[in-house]
Image (cartoon, rainbow over all chains, first blue to last red; front, side, top):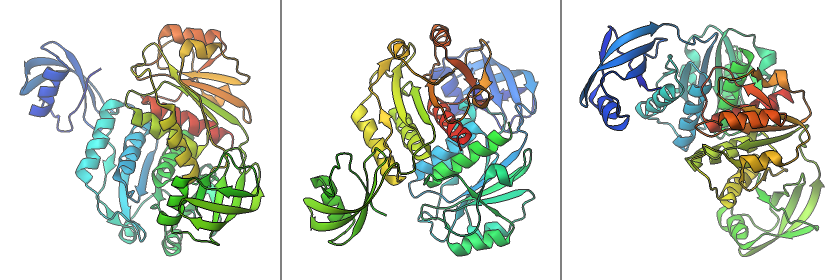
Length: 234
Length: 234
């Protein structure tokens, strides 16, 4: 199955851009009459036929449209401090996209060593995982934002924070949330959140979660949370 | 906390090898009297004091020994086809070590593009994750073995296989196994197991599992299985 990501599709025909046209004809060696699939990132899954295999401008005729393709039964937003080594965040984005996630926000915290991320590059990682794992919905990546500013934004749903500070009660996610909800979960940097940041979140109505005894890296904790929320919503 | 991996520890003193001595003195800048921790990979967690900070030969006096440190309540053996891009297998080994795994066997299947792995290098990845996540038990990495030969080896416990072939009944792991057991789970290569390999496993008493609708990469499927088994054994 050959998948193309076509967020701007509006009609019953579509023209691939030059890069994808080249990939389609030169790499995949597809020709007129070949069947491909398109995802628009918004739940649309299309079956299309190649009507012109011009390597600079491949045109497609849409044969079939499915909407709300594999629509998720919950909404997961993970706000995670970017890892010092950006590869680790990119791994998380790829894996979370495969397992199922709806929104990601890079948050810059007090102890964040990395304070800048290239959203374009991170979005490419997500898009590539969307195509590879055949997702009709494209996870939304927000611009990086400071922890304090992020907590000022409204969120309707279950709000959790993962931290390693030996302070206050923590519970497993399964004890804190019910299925089929909207979830927002905060994951700290390598050096963890500061006690002040944790208190700020708790005062904003976030509940503290535990992932067990394991000492997990930032991206592993974020992926563990992603797995657990999806597991609870099966 | 500074952790050193010391599988050969036998007495109440220990001498770090040249590489670790150098790391200890030149990088960590530790001196006589500094307290460090040692893990022997077999459940032993040691607290030790530096008695000589010779950068070629650091000597330690063991102050305290804890055995069966964070002993796991189940045994998880994952046999996985090495990924074409070895980074993906290394990423799995690191993450599985953080989350909890006991034994890994690289299996060479019919459709494996990669038929050779460097166990030494993979073991270094595991050891590094053992230290980073403070594990007193070192997961066992077996030499790569052919799928057929592996299935001939005896295993007492719950046996599962993950495959994407649209054949036969599949169930979630939670429906197939009970907690606190020994588990052996097979994960196929990028191109999946062949129907013959799946049948061979089923005839050997393996049960087919599903991880849900997501199309997961080999290393993601292996990690999802690791998450799920640990989750069921909390």
